[in-house]
Each structure stands twice: as structure tokens, then as C-alpha cells.
Length: 120
Image (cartoon, rainbow, N blue to C red):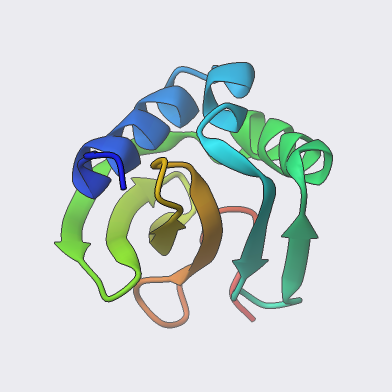
């Protein structure tokens, strides 16, 4: 297993998102990565092509305002960050090479509009 810091990798992801650097963001993912959006209207995205479309849509509509919290988790790290729509909590899972293999995102605070997923 290569040595990588999950917190630093999540911050790399956050920085790429904040800069609207789509290709830099996508390069952080494994080729077969998946994302499960736990917001209203649940969404599941698989593969880099689908991830590229998903994140390109979010850049303009839900820019990141800053980091809220980063905590280690059993699968990697959980990062909470503020967007124009509210605070989002995202759990990152990584492979041995430090690429993101799976993400689960959803509102960090109930009943708050979050990244691309307005509250009901």
C-alpha cells in the first residue's frame, strides 16, 4: 500500500472543486469510482464520464465556500464543507493508490438545501 494522507487527498479534492478544475478533480478518482448522493431525489453516479458530468454541473450552481470539518472514518475520511446551498457531509473511500473509489454525500444539517440537492 502506498503511503498517502486521506485528509490531504480530501483537501486536494476540495481545492480542485473550489477552483472549478474539473480535470484535476476527476484525476483524483479511480476509473470505476462511484458516488451516492443522499439528498432528496437520491442519485447514483458511476465511472469517470458520469462523474465529470455530475461535477461540471455543480461547479457553477453550488460553489464551495469553505471547509467545515474533516474527520477520519472507517473507510477513509468524512469532509464537511459549506456551499451556497448549505453544509454538505461527504464520506470518501480510497483504494491503495489513494484514488477515490466511492463517495457518499448528503446534508450535514437536516432540512438544509445542499450541493445540488434541495431539501424538501
